Image 1: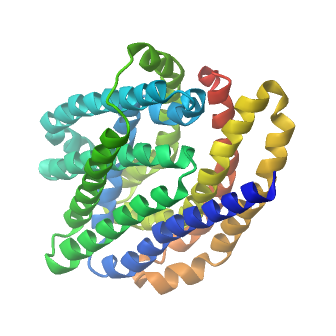
Image 2: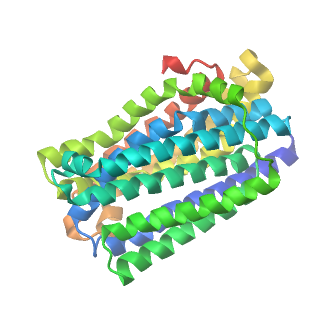
Length: 365
């Protein structure tokens, strides 16, 4: 790797780390404020609503957002095919969303009974689902910049999203006193605004185009990942539902806060992933079956740095939780320490999933 490429990667890494740093700092600012306004039960309601949203979003995207990262490099030399890949996926998942959003809206009372044993929280489930879709679609758009190694555009639009979400959530929760719904509305409006902004931008730089063959090829690889995604989400989210059955919404809220703090380490790893994943796919496509050794050497420094951050957050879990939250949330200390270890293992899962996608063997997952 020549010196110029190294400098570009270092600069890109700093941009991605700055964005993920903001993703980490904003919760550090809002959690001390919101935990003194919202109750443990409020956080429990948000956590359970998130379970439904994240599970169903997997069926909305059908793994296509993950497949896009790999296929981007397959078509990057052909502008027409690249546009067809992008728009075909975007249109397909948007149609899926409207279908499942309609089902969610008409079944929201039943879903509320299932999650909360009360029909009162149907609107929370519906709006959280819509907010999560807009957020994931925005990530899909941003992945174009990441794969194009345009860290400047990626960071610019990410910062706009973070800033809008922060300002709106403070306004809705602190000023208008909308409670936990203020967080949901802020997430929805900021993500929707970003999606509309990026849709206008992409329509100006890429002609709108659709190709059924490209979409079907991507679906063949992406569809098997839906099952994997379902069980992965179930493994990380369903514990909150179990807590709501065995304990209380307050217990779910404490667990949710612990999870948010511990997953700061995962956000840091994701920032590094934005740097190494495009390079990893480029090396895979360039070297084919002979690129394993080169990819391994390239990844090792990222693994060391990721694990170091995980260990530091776990080590200072008690201090972080005690400073940031009132005593009613201090039960989250042990949760933060344990889940940080879990996040450390997730780094290796990121590598395995990329290998399966490249080899077109996602069914193995």
